[in-house]
Amino acid sequence: MLSPLLQPVEFEDCPGWEDDNQLQALTAFRRSANRVLEKPYKSGSLGISFEALEPIFADSRETIVQTDIQARQFFEKWFRPARIMQDNSSSGFVTGFYEPEVIASPVRTDEFRIPFLKRPNDLIDIDDSNRPAGLDPYFAFARQTSAGLSEYYDRQAIESGALDGQGLEIAFVKSLVDAFFIHVQGAARLKMVDGSLRRITYAAKTGHRFTGIGKILLDRGEIAPENISMQSIRKWLAEHPEQAQSLMWNNQSYIFFREAAVDDESLGPIAAAKVPLMGGRSMAVDRLLHTFGTPFYIHAPQLTAFGGNSFSRLMIAQDTGSAIVGPARGDLFAGSGDAAGEIAGGIRHNADFYALVPRSLLGSM
Image (cartoon, rainbow, N blue to C red; front, top):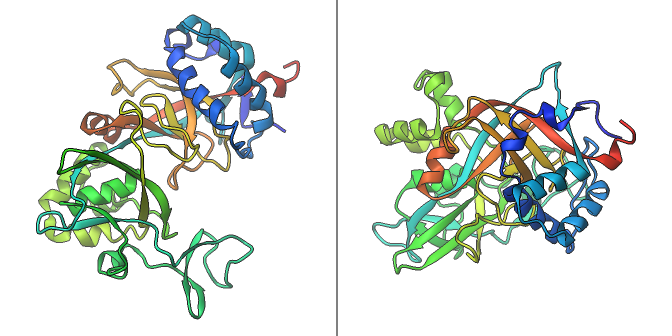
């Protein structure tokens, strides 16, 4: 059953709908359509089920579309927009994320000292079938010990050497701050000192809750609310090196990585929906509520970082994140590299969310 939070409207009610580049969105949508031939997506609880999306995925694989008008006709044929309402308001919130690029070394040196670690052998997936009594239900991972399963080491313990000597290091970077923000983003391109390009992406995490250090700085009055951004946080860390590590240790969550191929340098990493992310078209959502592959039309009139015009764009749900919680909450993928980082770091905007609902779920509405 479709959630009452999804209130059907018409496409003409979506500001700027006809001005958007729908062909780009369809390209991203097709990547999900091809992925589900291998494994279906789990359905989110708001009622846009994978079963309803499945025939649309199939049609996108077979239909030849070459223009924005044809792409728009495809989406209008199969979907109807539904404005997401919560607490009697249509206002949602978007942030941005990107794939950083950083110079790295395959071995530890005096200059390159900060490691990215692969998943350790004693990190165990946890669910209701094996969760030990007393372990926080939030934890999806735990540590296997001789006495049983227990909470895994946190960021401070790992960065203080708890996993040293296990050969988990994938590569090393110069800056603890660079490494921290790569953990926040969950992926990175590594420009190796020998000139090669490698990619690391999320493999697992310790299970601890994510704590945003930006909020801590806001609460302390270190950065004014109107100035908070990734750039202003990095500036504060650079200006307070003696406090940087202790501040970052407030975020107990620690990410483990795996290496991934760089098949197409124009695309981002393969994310939670198991497709490569597309800058300006892929979005992270709350995966408990939404089904991967669902198109969302996002209208954020104050957001101008993507090319100078108000952001009114069709996005495809292809990732998730621990901080992305709620029906009208999205994290917009800005792309890879420093320029994308400049865009992503400044995105904190109110936005209206229109989920594209398969017409088969709406009956005669």
